[in-house]
Image 1 (cartoon, rainbow, N blue to C red):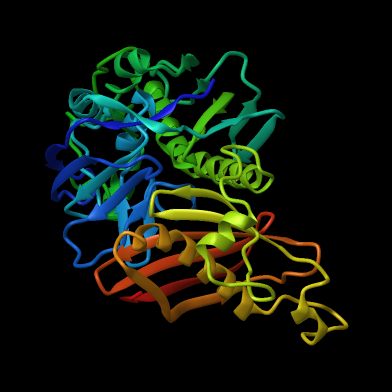
Image 2: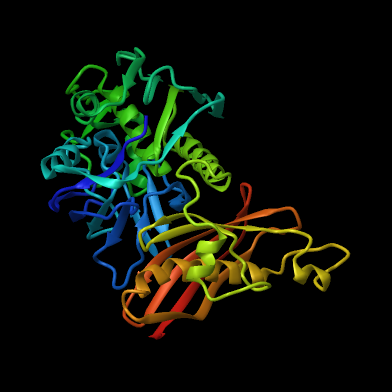
Amino acid sequence: MSRKERTIKRAVEMEGIALHSGDQVHVRIEPAPSGTGVIFQRTDMEDGPDIPALAGYLTVSQRRTVLRAGNGLVGMVEHLLSSCLGLGIDNVFVRVSSDELPGMDGSAKNYAELLAGAGVTEQKSERKVLTIKDPLVFREGDAELLVLPPSTDGLKIRYQPSYPEGVDATPLEFRLDRDSFLKEIAPARTFVQAEEIDSLLEAGLGKGANKENTVVLGGEEAGEMRMDREPTRHKILDILGDLALLGADLHADIVATRSGHSLNQTLVRHLREDLEALEVAGEGRGIQYEIQDVMRRLPHRYPFLLVDRVLEVEGYRRAVGIKNVTINEPFFQGHFPAKPLMPGVLQLEALAQLAGFLLQRKLDLTGKLGVLAAIDKVRFRGTVVPGDQLRLEVETLRVSASRVQVKGQGKVGRRVVSEALLSFAMIDA
């Protein structure tokens, strides 16, 4: 069952200590337009990039979820993201004063109560939904995630843990809904096994941890539980936080055995790719702009118009388009005709045209025109040949009165074939 997207009614703020760095951190969460998603913004960085809460921005980390965009990084986002997913809040700006969100009491309780207190307002756009149709299995060592078609409407998670002797390792099943999340999952605190403490401290982690915000399992200093099977509830909390990086509601049954962030993130990366493939196929939200609409918005014409369809536009922030590559393309006649390859520079041009389509929606209101001024961090990672469908995605990173920076990526199926940062100068139309 689909629903409308939601944001909060008013901005809310909180302060606390980061669990790993031990820093004092301030967080302000603000309403955001439909189609924005959850966007992290570092207030301690001058002109720092937006960091979207999407699987493509995950970076390697220990025992937590960390996102990176350009030179911007933010970690320990899973407790806030699980609260967003648990409460059905889709679009917010999160302004944070450090590279790590505060741990508060070690659970998602403070975040969930803060968001619930801000109120929720429904928006116009439909929330994306990904429904699992065929079973998926992901394994990492002795950990496993089994993803099945949904037995009921929505998301259900069954977690089978493994703990030291004396800790309740009974499996726990949870079906996602707002009230159940607030009562059964959000208050569950993070935990650590006693034998792990020294190695974590040596790695520079856990500087803000204490007996109140982190439950110790095993050993002489074993902590008291706030609720029955608290560690297992927190494991489900972490799964929800990582699944929030899908950028859509997931309808599935998940059976998790000893899984942690690493395996959770492998799953959500795969699911995000599946969601993008459905967008390319015209499913999901459906096609928003056909070629006639593209030509009304862009000045380019054959043979230089390199965007055939625009599948999705999220405000002024993100757009997804398609270029169908055929053997009749004029450039194939002279570019390695014996082994036709789409020139990399034309892939960049296609991304620039899609960026122009996205920006023009905003610039129409300002009397400005965006002209490509610079291309940075270009990478070509694979070939594009006749018969391929090139998926184009652009995302606005920075906007000022005189300049706009956009991140672009081209994919064929699951393969990333090109990517770059595109800068546009704003001139009078």
